[in-house]
Image 1 (cartoon, rainbow, N blue to C red):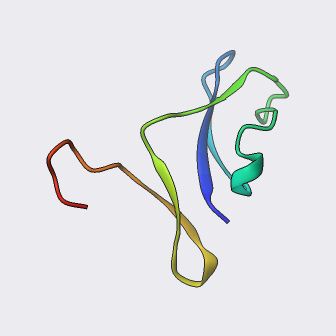
Image 2 (spheres, rainbow, N blue to C red):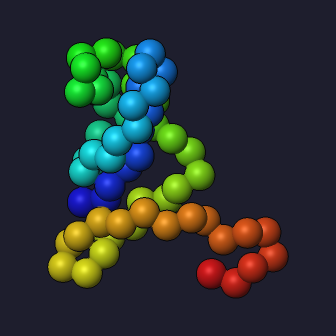
Length: 65
């Protein structure tokens, strides 16, 4: 299951969540209970060794993957 990075737009808390891809944009709350949470772009989730997810930056334009 991939890990996604989120940020609360009310308190600016940044956190990770393991979520199935089909539920990546489902609503959630931060630790303080705010419901104003957005998934951060720029990091792509990927499956890691043994089902462990990890985040990686997408390749720069013109760079091999």
